[in-house]
Image 1 (cartoon, rainbow, N blue to C red):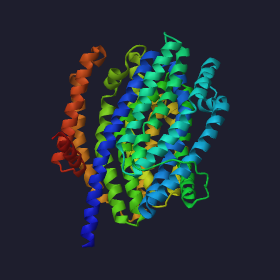
Image 2 (image 1 turned 30 degrees about the vertical axis):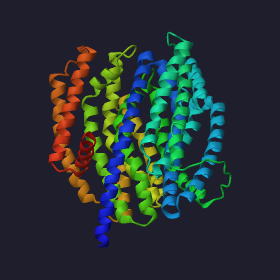
Image 3 (image 1 turned 120 degrees about the vertical axis):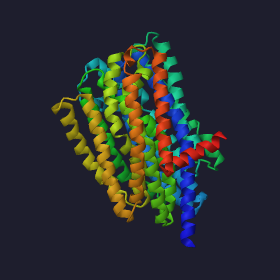
Image 4 (image 1 turned 90 degrees about the vertical axis):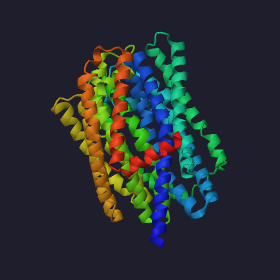
Length: 537
């Protein structure tokens, strides 16, 4: 009887997870598409050269710390603790914790913002390894100082998102990043044109201010949903609280673990800065495209899975914990393996259609496509890590990702040197080493999670991977035929003709993959198709 109830609970949680993942996925899709439009506009206005390099490097600094503190360590630690509070002590206790953490975050991030503005020259030198000329460095420092407060806004936005996700409100916070992109596009381009109608270096100041407009919009857009779930903020400086200590205790290892990724970003930035004008932009655009399916699928699944596994772990239901975690990873594999194949095999026409306008040339397309092909290799591991890594904090094994991250730093440094300079792959080597490091991280963490939990439905995982690989082979055949028949002359095609050919290829590939996966009885794909069918009725 108890086993039957347990299975029913797991099935219900799986359905909730899949449905919520779809909601988040659609919202994130909107955000990622707007992000692509934002990147497309910026690339068309400036090309992939000196000015865009300076803007992207300046934005990388606050964005790097946002990933480290806000959407990384803080978000994971807070959601884990907040979800546990709701499950064990109720909403009132959880809201008190939220007030304390929100006050602490606002004060701490304000101080970090002030320090970042003061020490911007040193931070830029750290990122570029002092290899850029004086005028490019000075421009980057100016843009960094303007955009640094973005980190404060987005840290608070991530905290609000965590509260809403723990209350099973996923759509509104996932849509919030769309407002960031809208603010950046509308505000940034308008101000940039006002400052310099020819969009020279001066107009970059307008784009930087637009980033702040977008960050503020991202925060404020979530407030109505937060009020609806019953939250009312008031300043609370009583930080000597068990809940706050738990958040900070979880954050420590999480910051160290996430800092490995950020240290790798610093290392990659230094290598890229030494390759001249262009590689910083090529890598950034390629990574953005790789993040499109990662955000739609990997981040969406991880966002939905974390509060569920946190609550299961809080009440000691490890059977449900394993089922939700394993299901989340299988769903991530089912959605990102075909995405990786499509990005790798159709890289050049995809980048050409999206970016090859204005000052973005065919040569820039070829260089960016080379990076995207190597980044696509790591997409599968990245998406699975979005689901797997936070689960260690839910079961109290917070030091495990931290220890693995130390290995990642040394591995990344060695692989960067090997592929970029020793083998002469240039910026492509940086993308390939990034993918290899992500894959190694996932394999090690999966093995350790399997050891911690006793089992992780590995047999079902291998069966699912086998079915996914069969369906993906058919998808790869479609992409191969497209490249040799109707996309082989993409450089000579007009934009409309090229866009139609690419759209038809992607549509046929999607139908072939999902149709084959459905016939092979891949449960995760069947769940997705079932939810879509219900919504279309």
